[in-house]
Amino acid sequence: MDHPNVITKLAVLDTVPILEALERCNEKFARSWWHWFFFGELEKPERAILGDPDAWYRNTPAKKEMMGLEAYEDYHRAVHDPATVHGMIEDYRAGLGIDREHDAEDRQSGKKITCPTLVLWSLRDDLEDLYGDVLKVWRPWTTDLRGYGINSGHHMAEEAPEELAQALKQFLSN
Image (cartoon, rainbow, N blue to C red; front, side, top):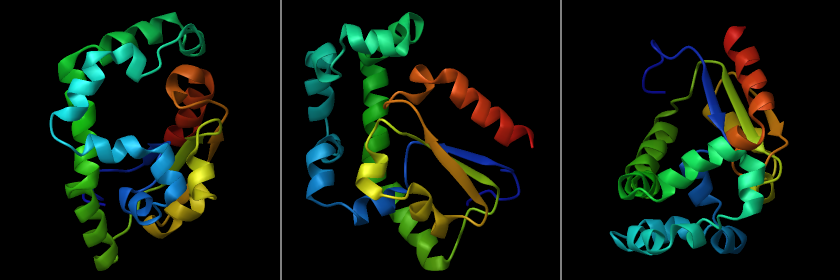
């Protein structure tokens, strides 16, 4: 929305606009995504995560198998790095602050994403459970929308790399 003269296509993976997520927040969301609000705290989330990253992120042999060894090793290294964890948490803090404010301003002014927009989401995660029709949530935010679910869990790029790459390649090359 902020740079329509530069951005020619947008691909969005496994999310809805933050304002939509917060406005639709209910008991189900709070039980599933309580960590969003915890991540809004200063210092506490990083201390909790870095105290035992493997326990926090439920790093199990099954996760390693789903992601593949190389991707899992990169991921494992990242969640043990204090700077990376801090950066991940800062993204959530922005969502609860400045990103939410920007979404509200954009909606109020009638601003929309005007380039072709592809929304892909994980079928074995909870986006559909929380929001129902994901494209319906996105429709008011864009003028040219398409998308569908990909058969993966939360780690779409690692769990379904070929399907994701094909979807992105097809969208970006047309």
